[in-house]
Amino acid sequence: MAEAIWTIGDVAATGPLAGVRVLDMSSVVMGPLATMMLADMGANVIKVENKGGTHAGDMMRYAGSSPTGDLGPIFMALNRNKKSVTIDGREELGKAQLETLLREADVFFHNVRMAGMARLGLDYESVKAINPNIIYIHCCGYGADGPYGKRQAYDDLVQAASGWADLYAKRSDGPPSYTPSLVADKTVGLFATIATLAAVVHRQRTGEGQFVSVPMFECFTFFNMVENLYGQTFPGDGKFGYTRSINPRRRPYPTKDGFIAIVPYVDRQWARFFEIGGRPGVFEDPRFSTYEERTKHTGDLYAIIEEVAATKTTDEWVELLEKEDIPAMRFNPIEKVPDDPHLKATGFFMDMAAPHIGPYRTLRHPIAFTGSPANQRLAPQSIGAQNCELPSAANDG
Image 1: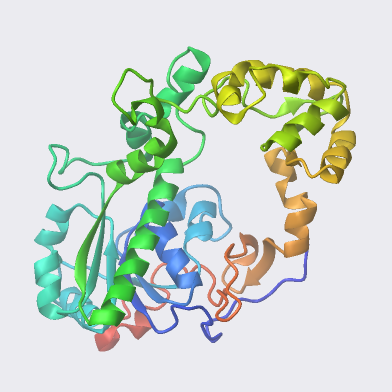
Image 2: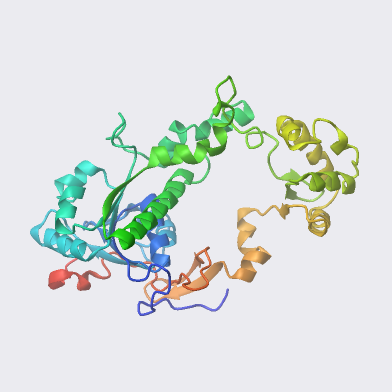
């Protein structure tokens, strides 16, 4: 392990959003990912959670084992650089505390269904009455104008409804399947980050706040259909699904001793790949000689690549292809990713420690700002850790 770094709360924010104040009432994955990105980039994020019993607050606190009890591994990954307070918005004191925090905020961010927020007096019009220039970000399941507007949305539901799960069926001629990742939650969380940044720029330019809706179903369908609308882009009888990405042979190729990803892209790379692979005549085949024809015959092309890949070891291929400037990467089982030499050289996995947690591993913010670098200045907080900072000194949570 690398030398542990004690994360403390008196490190100054150095990112480009330093000074932007975000009141965060999101939970689980989608919203917390977005607000963590904002926090890494310097925003002052206050995470508001519900009071309660044994499992109070964000349910992700309790997903997976943890030595702390309320700082589970997924919560740890999504909630650094945020202060934690617990507030009961149904009580008079809680309402007063929220009103004070809202008055001081630049951004109010949540992923609660709007009917519930209205019952708490936290719908957009009510919040705007408290802070006329606030940026109100609502991460919802579905656009309010459609028939699904009041439904709940979760990652599995959106993968199924967006056509994403069908890509597996199209690739394998088998049943649909979910990606073994919370891909919809995380993707839409990044959409929400982008939306918040755009609204902050608009407010800095005009002084105007606004209501911003980030619907999960629409955002993820957009993400999916960028390449998979494909043959339906123009009038006709074309099929959905980009032929290259849904091809069943699009996968890491077996080598003599492992697997490798190989993606020759331009004509020169294709021709040279087949030459060094002992198949110099392949690229002269009319099916593969142009980009357009390769796209039509992707399956045949990938089958030949698979045959060629099996003729050498992974190390041999990595050395040869790097020398020839042909895009390739060694396949990493997930257990080996922390040992990847590039990620080790860039310090991507960070071994850290905090008094209330002990040692833990986290990820470096992936974006490099030369003039205003993102930083880690506060470890994920135990629930209600900053209640003493609430208005009226409410410290009973």
